[in-house]
Amino acid sequence: MFTLFKKTSWKIKGKAFVFFDTLFQQLPTEFRFLSDGLHKGLYRRFGVNFSLKGHHYHIGFDPSQSDKSMTREKPFELKNIIVIEGENKYPLTITVHRGLWIGFGIEKNILKFKTFRFDLSMLEKDMKKFANDSKIEKLVKGLSSDKLTLDDLSEFEIDGKFYYQIKDLEDGNYIAIDKNGQVFGLIHDPYKIELINKSVRQFTNDVNCGKFDFNKYLDGIKQPM
Image (cartoon, rainbow, N blue to C red; front, side, top):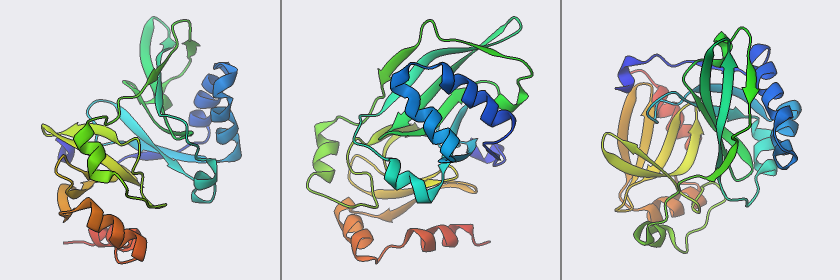
C-alpha cells in the first residue's frame, strides 16, 4: 500500500545528472532531445511515483520550458537498458510522452550506484500501452483543453481498477478518469483516491472556464486535516 512509503524526491544534479547524462549521450541520435532537455534544465527533479506498482519514478519539469517542449509524437518506452555495477545487472526503462521524458523504472535508486556502465545492445523502442478502448475514446471525443491531456490517455491500475490519466499534477499526483467518465484525484501523500466530478465533459468545461483551479485543488489537499 502507498501509505507504507514516505514521499521522496531528489533534484537532478550531481550524481543524478551524471547518471542520466551518461546514458542519454550513449543513446541513438533520434533520442538526442533527451540530452538537450537535460542540459537546458528542463528536467528538474525525480521522485518516487506512488501511483504505479514497482520501482517507478516521475520527472518534475521546469514549467517555463515544458509546454514549449511538448510535441505530438506518440508515447513510447526505451526498454532493455541494462545498468551494470560489478556482477549485478539492473534493467532500466525510460518513458517518454509527447516529447517529454516523464519517468523511469529501475529496481535500485540511481543515487546508490558507485560505479556503473550501460549495456544498450538490446535497446528497444516500445510504443507504450495507452488507452485504445473505443469506449474510453468516446468519453473524451470532441473535448479540448490546453490544460488537460485528452489524447493518448495513459492507462494504469490501482487496487484492481483501471484509470486513464488526463493531468499530471507532479509529485506523484494525478487527475484521471475511469471507464465511466468519472474524474478522480489520485493523491499519494496522504494516499487517497477521491471523486472530483462525475462527468469528464463537465470537468473539462470547468477547467476551461476557470471554475476548477489546479493550484487551489493542490493547496486544498496539502492542508492538514
